[in-house]
Every structure is written in structure tokens, then in C-alpha cells.
Length: 385
Image (cartoon, rainbow, N blue to C red; front, top):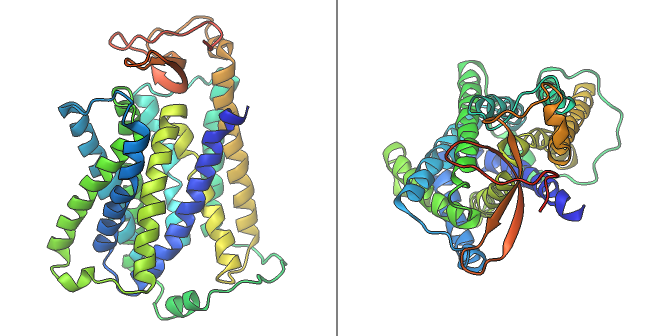
């Protein structure tokens, strides 16, 4: 039971890290830091941070970096790092963190649609697990949309004992975005979610032939760092934009590099291999809840009825999807409730038996994959070895 909970715990911690990244990044951008420079630093720092761990943990994995693998990592770096992050941080500069977090919660719906079209996720509305996944997605996204657009009355809660005065002065010195600028920022955030969903799908596909998440994340981060440096050279055209002092810019660059990319990307890559792309994307609404709590604790923001209702719906929807996922993994008979027979090309494989070619040790990885004539995977009747 303990090992089965690891992906869930890992993704909750990732969302906590992302929430902190949103706050620090917004403060750094408000001081005039270029978003392209921040993204370049983020990926380069992440690559350097992950390289030793990738070598230590995966040097004997037997994985071979072929031209096809490098091509897949290159496209992953474009969608999952460069394009996604450029759109997000440029959009964040023109909007607020709470709105950015709320719009980011279109990610589960986008990923679900893409995975369903590519037959990486089954949509079986005649089964309890299928109904839970669809309903949970709707409830989760709906709850996340309530928080920014419906305030309601203030909740009577105790005052936070913490308050970051620097954050107060930084936000007071910057005018709140409005009008066309805010609309453009919101659109860019949504487009970043599209790129993010594509990365989830690419990462899941790549794991079929290159199961080394730390190595692939390291290479992807270094590629993205070079790509973003090129974008900065075109957009900023100033060496001074890269200067860092002992201030919020340096702290933000280190945090987004080590936590926001280095640790988060590696953990998400591992979770995608373990539970599939939809499982990972469904945790993104938690970031909105954390941002609301951090805003109350540090920035003394007030909590409204809308925030409480939205948070409750997010948690409820998340548990629906997790229950549906668990039902699929532990109850194969649930997959046959809607027709009585097995679908030859859309049957979800519940267990994948992987063998290390060098030492012959067997490992069992719970995954969500689609069988096809090219990749026929062995499964046992009860889903275990």
C-alpha cells in the first residue's frame, strides 16, 4: 500500500513546489526581469542540477540514447519546456498568479481529450471507473473556475501570523493588469496549457522506448535552456538582462530551476511512466488551492466563500478520478462491464513486465498503455506477476 501511494504523494509535493514558483516568478517579473532570461536560467540550472543524479541512478539502466530518442527529447523540450514556459511566463507578466493558476486547470481536460483521441485513455461511460474519470474531470475543472470568477462574502478566519513585507511592496509598486493586456495574458496561459498537454502525451510515448526519466529530463532541460537563450538573444538584445544580484531575481532563478524544473520534471516523468498522463495532469488544480492558502498566509489575502467552494470541488473531483484510476488498476473486470468482451486495441494494460537485459532482474511497473500490433505486452489474469 505504501508504494502505491508514492505517485500521489509525489504529485502533491510537485504542486506545492509549483505554487511557490508562481509567487516567486511573479515577484521577479514585477521587478523588470525578462521572462525569457528567467526561463533560460530555469532550464540551464535544472540540467546542471539533475545531471549527477541521472548518472548515479541510471548509469546501469541499459537504456541507449539513439537518434530517435534524441529526436523525441528535442520535441519534448520544445513543447514541455520552451514553448510551454515562454507562453506561461509572458502571460503571467500580463495577468495575476491566481488567474494564471485558474486557467492552468484547463490542462486535465485538454490532456484527457488528447489521450482519449490517441487511445491512451479509455472512455467507458458504461463502467463506474469511466464515469468517475469523466465526472471527476468536470467537477475538478469546474471547481477551479469558481475560485477566480466568484468571490462571495468573506469568511471569518483568524489573521495569518506571517506576512512578507517585501512581497507587499513589490506588488504595490506594480499596476494590476487590465484591458487588452490581461486578455492577451490569459490567452497565452491557455496556449501554454495546450503545449503542456502535448508534452504529457510525448513523454508517455517516449517512455515506451526510453525508460530513464532523469536522463531524459536532464537532456531536455539543457536543450530547452539553449533554445530559451536564443529566444532571449532575439527578444531582449541586451547582456544586462542576464545580470543577477543577491535579490529576488537570483532566488527566483534558483528556485524555478531546482524545484520548478529539476525536481518537478523528473518526478512527473516518473509518475507518467507509473500512472499515465491523465493521472499527472489531474493534480494541477491543487496548485490553485495552495496559491490561495499562501496568499492568505504570507500576503494577508482574504479568503472568500467562492474560494472555499472551489477548493472543496477540486478535492472532490480529484478523488473521483483517483478512484476511477484505482478501480481500473485493481479491478480488470470493471473494464468488461460495458460490453462483456475485451477490446483488442483499446484495452488498458495494467501491468508491464520489464526485464533488465544485463542482469535479468524483473520489475513490475503499473502503467496505462494502449496495446497495438507493434507493441503486444504480456499481462496476467489478475494484473500481477
